[in-house]
Image 1 (cartoon, rainbow, N blue to C red):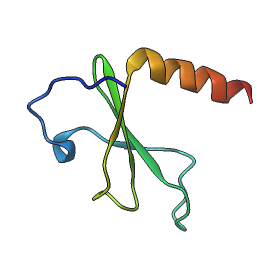
Image 2 (image 1 turned 120 degrees about the horizontal axis):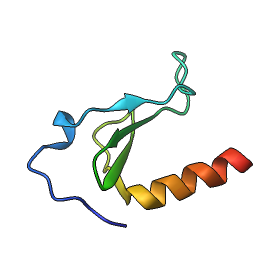
Image 3 (image 1 turned 30 degrees about the vertical axis):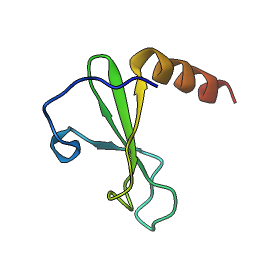
Length: 68
């Protein structure tokens, strides 16, 4: 996994909640895309560590999940 150097803290990133995350709880994911990295976190527990993947790796993941 790659990390993009940034002076921004995790809370300063522009997080977007998944459209599949419902208001009733359950599995909620937020992503914060950057130029070369996509950060992923659990929106229910923002104190947990953030997963950071390369933009290319994220695109590959999205293509794979769209096929299944």
